[in-house]
Image (tube, rainbow, N blue to C red; front, side, top):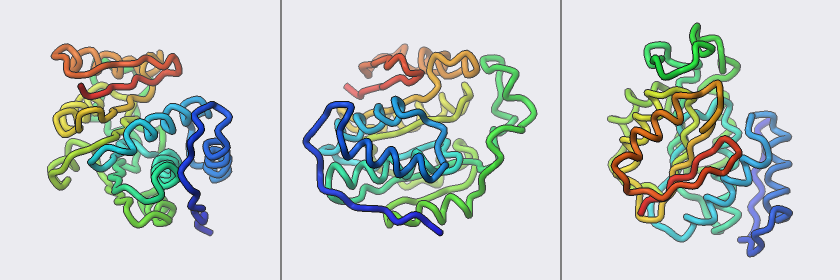
Length: 222
């Protein structure tokens, strides 16, 4: 049975024991569809709070089983009282092996990770939200199909150098001032390509950055 999303009024608290955050975390964790620990979900919650008054839509690239996308969508409703359009993109077939590079760990070779999912399952799960659009495919192939618009929040969780760089190059220019790109697995020994892609993209400036020390990097558009 698809989980029923519970709408709640906007919160004013910002401490880690924020009851809305904890309730939503328990709900999403109970679905068994995210690998993100509570401290990483807290970063997502804070990112949503920092962009909730901005214009633009949101996106997640690398959703796996849809848990973090559900969390983002529900966080926008909890903080603003309404949904925000969100593009959710994944191969639903693990890592695209043609996107592996010398910047990536060899543990990603073989295409055997993140296969316990499907487009149909995630689309059904996220149908709890009217404004979430799920797309199947490798990001560089999907990007030309996306409508031209601005973004306030982007969550990139793709593990590899090239897909991360593709995502940064696409969303960076389309991010509104004050908008956020959140990179997952930044600093992870198993995903060295994330740091490489971030350093390459950020060399031209235009962003403030915050290393959360939870293997996440927050990029804020100047």
